[in-house]
Image (cartoon, rainbow, N blue to C red; front, side, top):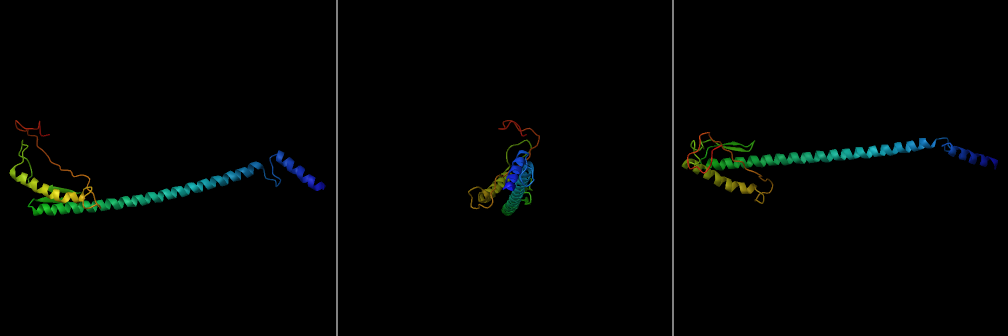
Length: 173
């Protein structure tokens, strides 16, 4: 019986001095638990970063596929319009890589004028008819949903010669 009392007294003394009965201090045990917890948090953080990186990579690949599909559709549209315009006798340059259709003929206004000449008027009319026939297929709600056309830019240039008297525009700049 006296041995049992000795161990109890030793445990009380150890507890007063911050030690467990097996000789390890209370602070050391707590630090190893905190270290284990920090390792677990770091492991979870690494898993989250890897998961995020994987999802980001998948989205980048999807974006690249969408861009490639849009470029193919734009190229097909420009080539198709170019063929139709050539059939109408309008000389055009087709840059399907950049989505540009240029009129090669001297499609210009007379200097200092805002009026289309008869030849230019016919050319613009023919081009307009081709665009009206082809573009709805690529618009929202059109026949083709796989590729959509968001904008068409028509660009032109002017000279610095002032417009004639009675013009509906203040200037040609």
